[in-house]
Length: 475
Ligand SMILES: [Zn+2]
Image (tube, rainbow, N blue to C red; front, side, top):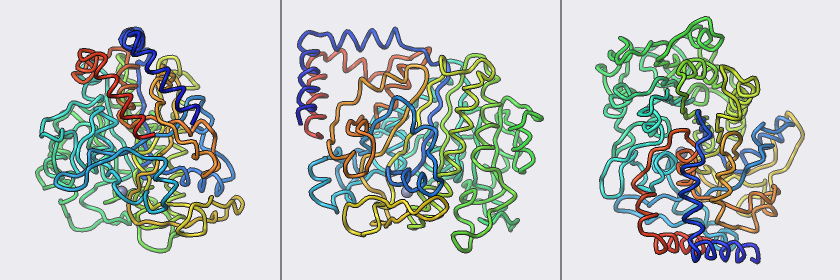
């Protein structure tokens, strides 16, 4: 409580003297260390996904040791004609176990918030609540001459990767989304979503609904917009090991909905062997994107953690999170090595989630209790409490160029996070998901002024005071 009050007071001192406004505008000009921005999203990953995976593997994701970390509010504007989105409320969260299950965002609005800094309605990609089209951070980066990409373990036109460039009020309109992605500036598109294969990676009769229609598929495979089309595992591997080179790639693994999670059989069923993992796709994507000397911006998603959590499948959720963790390690290794001149001094890496899925807690269902460590190689003690998304805070971790910009946005406080989850006290402070955009845009070595921030600065004290008040209500 004391901490929260002191932070609020500091903010108001800043507003009263105008220092905060000055600091913000100076930051927008003086920052910009990041030639490259890498946003990695584990879709549906809550704190207990991270914890369960750590217990199962007997180790930690490399991002957990990043110096910059905290929690993040994921609320959206709500749904069009439905519920009204309300920011996370710590008091209500811990007073009522079922609170977390209502009013949760979906992946479309969550991605829009992170990529554009604007909260919109669920199921809509980069459209404002009044129907205007939004420009994403990645599109801004492309307009600056940087290479851009979207990579996922689910179909490439699913909400989180689609939102990198698409604008639509219907996230399920794969005809429009795929067409927009084909015609976009994206230099790398990779994921599942192959219309000629099933979820077990077996060739089947064509079913084009996953890409909208056959015309889209024909455009992709014929190299529309200058992209090299690849779909075989050997091609993905060649791109990753550098024996194949290209400046523009559309890679669709030979599988339909997800790389692995949707395969039939027991949770432990053998993996599809004809498809790349996220590590291979990530390495391949970096090899393509870093051909551009202006830098790059890419979103890399562990997309199926969400799907496994929807199905309350802990083993498969952990498997998907391991795949995600390995791909983060690949990025870290790439930057540690200073590959192609890209290192922590000129690259911002953000690792986060768009929302939690499944209401995963410890083994006693229906109550707050911590996940139990049963030793490496054994499933941890845990129980799902929902088949859908929840509005709990999710973790974010950042490292590299301008990662400390996140410290400016840690305005929410939930003093129970560390106790309830058994996690670092750093997670007792939280940002809003729209702050992901603000940090990426400010860190970008060639930031573009966005209408939102101009408006905020223009409206001066009133706008900032309102901003502070929103966070106090949330906290
Ligand atoms: Zn979901």
